Length: 164
Image 1 (tube, one colour):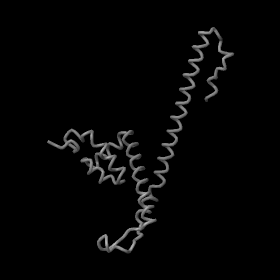
Image 2: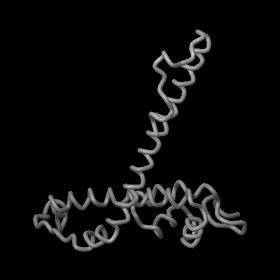
Image 3: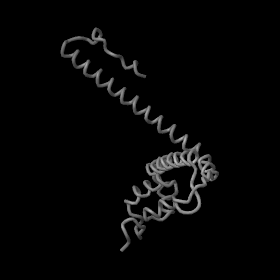
Image 4: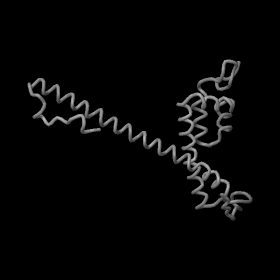
């Protein structure tokens, strides 16, 4: 009997996704994340291609991973890494970040696009929430005007064209 997180004859178990995404947000490494989740790498790529929601979660996890990597890199740039011997005898600091810088540069544009899309969605959600609240206020004012026998002209009603 296969383990819960491993692929089986009927396909991978559904519960591998959270473990995969968590490890991906920590490591930015797809193969390592798939192993940690107990699922085959080809499965995670196939699911990403076929499920838009999972593809978005994947990309968000990568963005989180690259944010963490950037913070680690900044720390190493400032403090360096001690090398040689045990903790008591290490004295020389090494500042070898060329590979990390190349990796960050390679993904900077895609992470920037994802952040811009996320910010735009937040803005759209905020505007939709404001518009919904205005609609509810208009409806309450219409109901109050009906109860009072007013036609709504004197009540300071906000017209629908006021919020685009």
